[in-house]
Length: 307
Image (cartoon, rainbow, N blue to C red; front, side, top):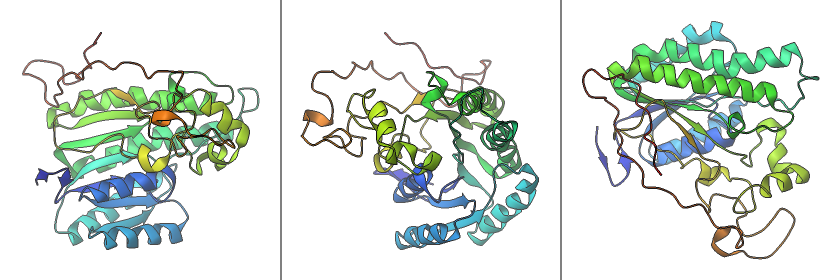
């Protein structure tokens, strides 16, 4: 395995929920860096086949496997499918796992049904927990696991109590995974995207003008995030990483909006892809990163505070 000029070779990533939305752009981004990809889809086989053809056209090996992440009873069979694909590719291990698959439910606490609540928990936390467990024998030492959370786990917005609660559990799970897998050199982290213009949740951020406007008014660049650029906020790499941390992607890049030069339904350019009257906050220098702690230290490495 080698990494030169930003290209990762002879590596395999598994991405759940990779056939559409932000997951699809993640898969494209990973493959564009020279990594072969196994991704899952739930029901849209046509979209999965289209993406597989696209990745193969990029010169990468790709496999689309059907999986309902909310049904843990299917994980043993899925693990065998992964093992078969890896065998066909001449390897027994994969390096990267992205637990991305998810659904959104917009309902107040009063209106949330038990069925909705259970479905959210089964997909976002139970599914990610036990799927990772089943795949651990095949992930290479020194590998990387990324769990996808949400900005709604750090601020409250009416209608997302159950969804955000599930994602909050994902962030706690991530810290424990980092603690227990650190001895194998496996770094486990969370990314927490903000509102992205995809078909997630019925495309509410992308297609609902009122929701789009509300999101736009709370970002520095007056627009929600765009999946094509949002998928590149993080990198799967062999380079050392912090373990157990959450990286918020909602305000990562001022040029990550699909329409950085205008508000929803409005025209008119804006400088630097954002609001000219609201400066971007100053960022402190990133601390040094390490995936393997010094001997005798807890394997859960925390981000040092910077002023």
